[in-house]
Image (cartoon, rainbow, N blue to C red; front, top):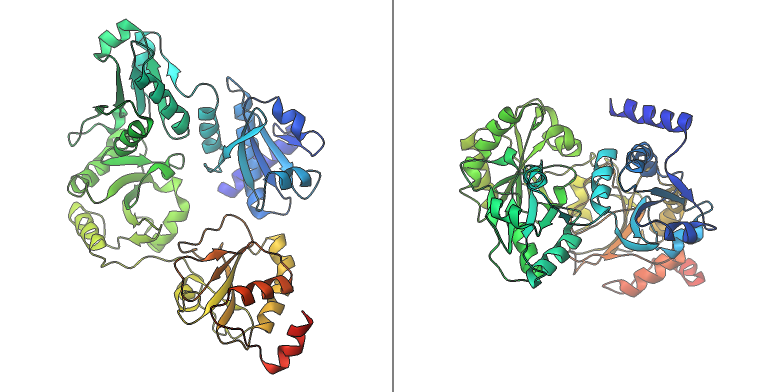
Length: 484
């Protein structure tokens, strides 16, 4: 179904033209300066992730073109006529997305990569970060919105107001903000010179309050801490748009969450999660999420996806722990207890371990990552690649040659892992391909990202310099090594 949608969107783009603005080295500087705000995608035509993003990006561009104010979506071909622009902005992987304001990079875009999420995220970037409300009717709509909102009630231009607006600027991607100086609105709402957090009506429950009044100092850091600690409540509604705002360790209940067509049924299950969450609120965070919004997470439940409610926990490092028992309040409470006691093993997405792994480059999968990469007796250079990646294909013969060179070196392993088919464990961060890390035997918890050249001699020099023990090449390879 999803692939049919992407093909259809691509067809519409080809037939009716594109609303994505394509810029090159010759006009990027002048055109981007004329845009108050813009989202720029730096891409490569051969990149698989770029191809998957293209129809979603196109759909988002069409929607945001109609926004008030419009938000342009731009793309730059990094292997075509935009090479210099991509180099200037430090692009090393594809696609790379950045938010520009008046021609200057404001921030890296790390939001959703589907049309709805892009539109939602960029709408928050456009216009003022906090909406000024001037009448009671509008304020009621603001407070009663689908998402939580922070409202500032100010009688004067105080330090509290100034710090509130700074917080709004900093957190506009994550939360809604509004403020008013209207006396009648403040009289109606019963707040003056105060900041109030309103949780949405759909999340009201007997287990917690739906409104919180800030009682701290006129400090941006203090205001932001108040928001982060209270905005989602005991059990928040996690979506692709706000997933990064949920703190870990986090327990997530996945089911048919639908606050539009079935709010009563949705809260039936949420209330059962709340019964457990209230007893562990000092140790864990909780959330509910729609199965359809987190397809990749569903892989960890294998053939159990037809169950009504599925539960998983994620720790600080991002590792996932799955509840195998059928959902019930008692089973959830036991799962949380066992998780906190360290009695549950982490789930790892993995290909099967190769039956023959004696080649010059060791094949790493999720199931043997610990054995190979975290071997305390070996230094390991590991490449995380994607089968469709052009740069990875170009590197492959050189990387194999490197593996041959070190095949007889006992204390060094040259390895590779398909990062699209296996979980990349923390602390490894892979945002583009190929990504290469050096994992020395005495510092497996702090691997070093390789940023050097891609020739065999570059890798050899790096390994000789970084190796925990002196490199001793086999005699038959010594002449080749000397030639380097």
